[in-house]
Image (tube, rainbow over all chains, first blue to last red; front, top):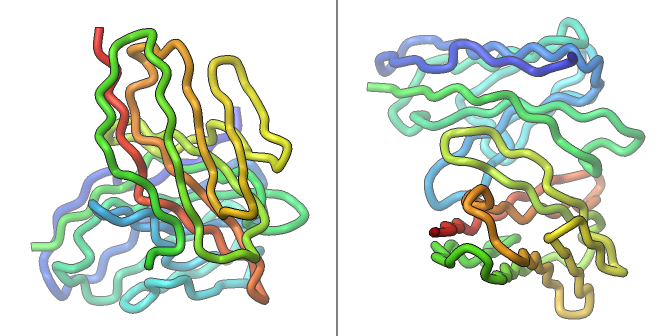
Length: 115
Length: 111
């Protein structure tokens, strides 16, 4: 069955370190997204991609970067981790004619703690 | 004002009860509407889309009121397994499509 997987599922790191969260989908979806979820907030969009070599900033993109070299993967990099980036990160994908208007399929999440 | 607002709850209801959640959105240009369900420490999953005419899926009924800019979700005959957080989701086109999630409403169904 097609799926979307994230790794690592849990990570503890120190302030200032570079961290990369992996996201891999086998749906063959064009659209991929990274969200963070914090208590009291809805899911907030960090970065998104509508296809290979396409990347776009979301509403909370500062301190994060992504790259899209193939259809399946959208890794999220925290260049220099900060305590404010402690959160649960969800990767999602979708595939329809109009990006972001259809169902989003989420990975299981990556819980990141920055000490 | 948040773009999508939900009562955070929690709603504590007995099995068999009917419970309703409301969600309001601020941008009248919003185009598509959804309810997602999220179990504790799990990923969100689509529960149902919301159409202007209203739609029903088993015990779940979703309604959209564009004039008042709110969406509702009604759950009839609540089951223990309905305990979860329900996320209201709105998409709009502001030169590019944007999906906005509410913070969610927590539901606890008790025996």
